[in-house]
Image 1 (cartoon, rainbow, N blue to C red):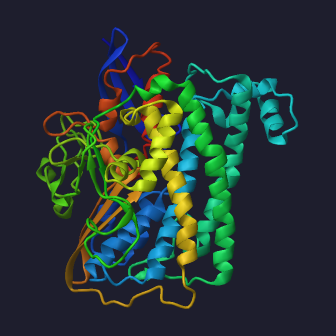
Image 2 (tube, rainbow, N blue to C red):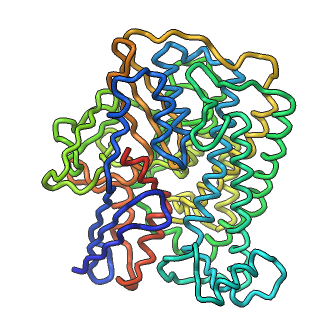
Length: 504
């Protein structure tokens, strides 16, 4: 038995350690370790409840808008505002979060994952006039890989010209992401850590001038997603078609749903949303979401055992560094006692199986391009394709929501902080199901719990010893070279882990 440790996994957010045991070239066991403890839930205790919307965004600098929406929904619930948010505010929250998520998906593919498949050294043979590619060529001639290193040397398969074009898209993606950030800031005030989303609605008001500026930037995002991002993912998936069969994982998927299409139902599990709420397993059957089925267990996490098996609304954050048998600062969320994966694949397939006609048509088209069945989405390339398709669905709807705004109409609802209350906020961050829970006593935060996407995906074993989603995706993988385990990092990065979130 050979032990292979990747510590840290690079090109992700935060410090993740992956340990595997390999026998005869096959991964027999895997452990996912979230290093560091941050304690943001403890920082929130005793504060004004409105501080949650500000401080909870600091859980992550990559997806703060999604935490801002989750916190605002949580406070809306606690303050009795769940069905009182003005339509303008609902739409502007969608625009702020959705635009940020589109650029975040672009970030993940080009700047965090694509280099697992694109060989940038091919630019050394470039003979064109693109100044950015010629700048990269100069660095390569000096023997400098710059931001493209460190890396494992994968089995790069793309033709030289395609590698060069993909590298150009890598550079173009920086400009597009900036455009996305500028659009977010129009209504949110700044980025990261928005000041625009608050309990009761939003702080800004739509004007014709702002709508026009936002629309121009959304068009740029749509153009890049449709003409560059999605075609690149399909091209790479067709060449690396074996990765449509690698890294399947647990094949249980969970989505909280996101982007409210109506705001008249205070129950977030029933509210009409662009991406649907529910679960799907390998049998591709849809099941409604049952929030009461969620628990967090900690047998293999560095938290006191007294906090295990609790629903997030009753969750505890009691660190126990050095606990015997534990190996991660990430808790282990479970749904009905089972392991579930969250993320773009989950929200896409839940929406697909729930019968959304637009999503069904788009997914079927993409799979036809790859000559692959729906079951192929349970894979490394399936996750990348799902992320790109989610970006397209969102980019298309951003324009629609923008044009539904009504200048001069309200964007905020007044409220009073209750003496005692509980609240829950559910949405979908870039990386999957994101939930916030609050308990208020004497107008202060008595308890605050967040269960974030990478808490689900990077979780360690549960109290029954069942590995988490990333761990299961790694087990059974064939590794050609233990000293160059590119197969393992490709699988891990397909989940787009965010350790800052998971060790909050």
